[in-house]
Every structure is written in C-alpha cells, then in structure tokens.
Image (cartoon, one colour):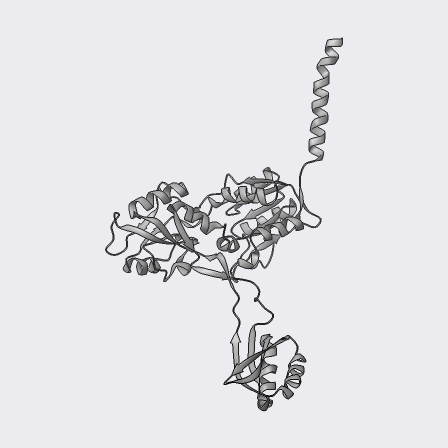
Length: 377
C-alpha cells in the first residue's frame, strides 16, 4: 500500500504544476498590443493610398494570447488560424482594401470578416508601413544580395515638422520704436510663434523677426505685412520641410561591396527566396556574365518605385510589361519572382523581432498554408 501511495504523488504534483502554468498563461490587451506594434513600425510610414492598421476588431475587451502571421489572409489561411486558436491575425496584405458595401456570405473577403467576428479574432495589416521600416520587408529582401550598403529609393519623411508650423517668415524691422508694435500684432495671429534676433547690415543694427506659422496663419501674416510696409524690409517666406527619416522609405538602392555576375546574383536571390526558378529580362547588351554592382529592389509590385532608378539590376515581384521593356532598353536587367515570393520570407524574421519587441508575452506563430497563388509548372 505504501508503494502505491508513493507512485501517485508525482502524478498529483504534475497536475497541480500544470494548473499553475495554465493560470499564468501570458496575454496582452489588444489596445496595448496595437500600441506596441505601432512602436515597432509606425503606421504613419504607410503610403497614403494604403489601408493599414486594425481592420477587424472584436467587441472589447479583447485579449491576445496568440498572434498569427501571414502574408495573405485567404479562407484556407483563416481556417488554419482558427484551428490554432489565434486571437489576432497579422496579415501583411490588407484583406480589406476596397470598401465593403455589405457583409454577407457572398464573397470570400466578406466571409473572412464574418468568420473573424464570429470567432472573436482581430485582423491587423501593416503592409507598406513594413515596406518602409528600416527593419522591414525591403531590408530583408536586400539581405539576399550579398554584402552591400543600401538606402531607400524614395525616403520617408517624419510625420511632423521639426518646429511649429509649416512656413517660416523672416523680415527686418527698421526702427526699434516699431519693434514692440510689430511683435504684439503678429502674436495676436493664431498659430504663430515669434522669435527675434539682432543683425548688422551695412553697418546698421537691425532686429530680425522670425515667425513660424501654419498655412492658414501665413495668409494673415502676409496681409499684416502688406498693410504695414513702413515697418519692415527684406522679407523672406520659406516652406518648411519635414525631415527625412534615416534608412526609412520605399524600395532600396543597394551597392554591392564586390560586383558579381548576373548569373551569381540570380543564384543568390533564388537561394534567399527558396525558389527553383525566377523570371529574367536581360538588359540590352547584357549577358549572364555581365557584372552587377548596383541593385534597385522593391518587394511586391515594383513598377512605380523602381521607375527611373539607376542600377544594373531591378529585383521585384512583378512589373508591368512596358516597364520591363523600358528598363531593358536602358541596359538594366530585371528579375521577377512573383509578388508575394519577395515578401513572405520576411515573416520568419518578423516573428523573431516581434518576440523580442513584445518581450515574449504572447505566442507568435507562422501560417503553414500561406503561399503565392502562382506556380511555374
């Protein structure tokens, strides 16, 4: 009897331990998770035409234990996400792009929304925000080229101006007796900040006034100055630019540390993307042995981003027929890998980066059914 009791003790301890682990299962509130995802790559980096962010939201409160990553959210992938008990689906491509006029069982995208809401699963899409991010899709694609330095083809600008306002107006006040009158008048205009500093012109001391103002306030400032021309001289109006964000933007222009033949570049790209074949358009006058030093790339559809970029090789998922002809006529070779084949591999890196960024508070899993719809046969 004593032996029998001893044998049961480990089983009981194991059961209690399992209950304790289950009670401490990690999760994040959806709103907290969304804030962390935006910290990882701000949605402000996305193109203005894009549809990014939280696309489907279950009724709050909603907690997330499992984040499911996919490049495209198809019905097959949705079924997989539900089987794996996902609470939030991060779909790189937005499954909702054009506005939906109704939610019925008629079309596959409407059915995605219905199934997500019925099963309390959120849908989030970063799309071009991840294209532009320094640690995003295009930077991952560039890893397959070999050792190189890269910069965005179309750099992103900061969401805000470095100072208050969109314009700067500077002018000199002739007489100190008018200085207070001028400053008091412009300070009464909304959305105007005023600074002043001393300058010397032609051995004459003057006070320079600098105003930062909004587009709307600029009209009032100009009206005031036109009505009080006796007070000032040497006026300058400048449009303020938002600063460029380092290593952030659409596409990448990559300069290899050591030039390689086109044939070598093709094999590197196929290896990186795990593809048996790619499509190639040879630039006029080029061969497979032609050296490649500069590569312009854009994950997905690259026509608009790559157009006009000076390079030996264009790398993207798809381009229009006529853009391929234009590039080839300039001696630029083009490699096309199909749209999502230039994006999907990034998700493995994303899983690791998000795990670290979210401090492993939730489970992050990759879709096993997500694939490019096109196959070479």
